[in-house]
Image 1 (spheres, protein in one colour):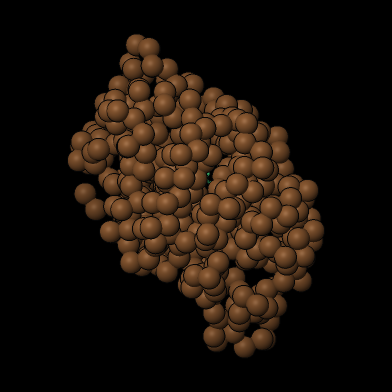
Image 2 (cartoon, rainbow, N blue to C red; image 1 turned 60 degrees about the horizontal axis):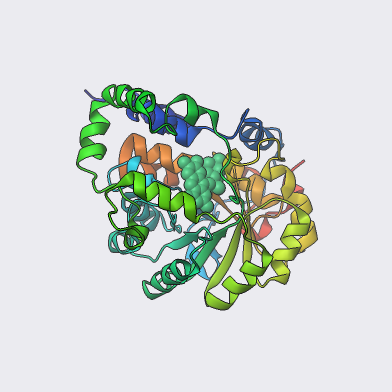
Length: 382
Ligand code: FNR
């Protein structure tokens, strides 16, 4: 059956993903921490900002090209690292990396991605950004850093807002955290309702283990043992000292992801970071914190151009991208939108999503009367 309506926005892809994914996976992507107040605020605060329309400025040529940490990009956007993306679409990280490469924007591979670095690099014409969580076993961390560097990654996103995992009630309700019979039954009935996903991703998309960590456990196919190892490895004791240690061991670009406050951003500068991602993990960690776009002006003022800022959380359109740039970000990351596009329509979906975002950015810039990103500043937001 041919679809009679085609997806145009992030939200359209969200609806497609909802129809295709088993409930527990859709909610794992879609949901946030606790009462989801921060998740809601991330988008709502973008919506409450007003752009200023400017006319008669000759906008025949509007250019969204930029350089992100030394890498040329067709627009100031990168795909955020998302764990388990190989469950959203068949070999999902490889498909998304290919789409990002076609669109000319960076792709970030999560520590807990399904596809390994080698598979992602084989699929894409450009090296990806690599995202790392600190693990208790620093030898494993060093091994991952060396492997990433050797495979051509030059940019490391080091995530700092997951000292402990946030509480996500949707995952509890869907049985995602329950290894007992009730959890298994709940998941099995949700899987049975999605035979298309079961065949395409569940069966043909194997193996489903964490590709970058397979040498850390004796039997990577034993997912329970794998999860137990991973849980034991998350290090709640990480401090700024570890950032100094990391700085010594990573010769490339080091970006700290998951800062939200001015004093932390200044500390990142002192520790030798090359940039930050202003992020609340898409509202998945501490519920009740401010939205990222709300925090941006103060952090940008404090850093005063000394450290580039990327922002993520709630970016859903080219208009949102322009608002973030106007308030002081050098670029944005998108998380859920690419997961939904991948789940709903695979590589093509991610390509079309990215093309749509760029088109929206061009039109928004033109109607604000600017031709280049260098002309975007706070005067665009009223
Ligand atoms: C994430 N995020 C995330 N961040 C990270 O550093 N490593 C990871 O493995 C993951 N995994 C992950 C899975 C899923 C399903 C989501 C939704 C998010 C956070 C992500 O990189 C990013 O910060 C947010 O997704 C940005 O918010 P939006 O664009 O989803 O609103």
